[in-house]
Length: 71
Image (cartoon, rainbow, N blue to C red; front, side):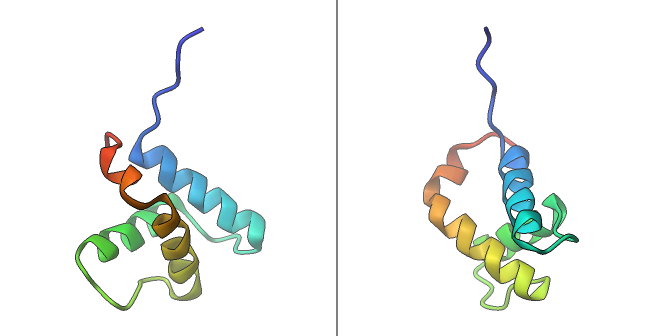
């Protein structure tokens, strides 16, 4: 059995799935990516309102591990 490669895109999709399960049906991987991009740029205001803030929280939990993932 081959090992699945985990990428930034799969991380974004995982966070978006979590947000949808939490009650935000419109959450998407693109929204999570926009939030991550804003975080990396040092922005203090997250895009996409509350969804962005929840995504930010989950991305912060992953910490620098995201920096080691391929695109």
